[in-house]
Image (cartoon, rainbow, N blue to C red; front, side, top):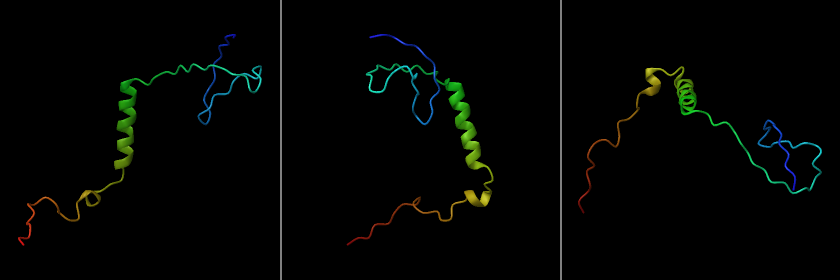
Length: 77
């Protein structure tokens, strides 16, 4: 077995391999990817929340009916 190191960019959840590896050749793949820092993920999440709430008004956020908050009355049979 020989080792070949190369860099590639994913495309549609696949990684192109060099052309000098013939089709049908068994290969062992090790994937090393940079993990986004927790600060970066938090920033992305906050940006997503801002996009979701953009353009909403108070009318959009009011509840139409206040149901399910009072104590239920069970019929006695």
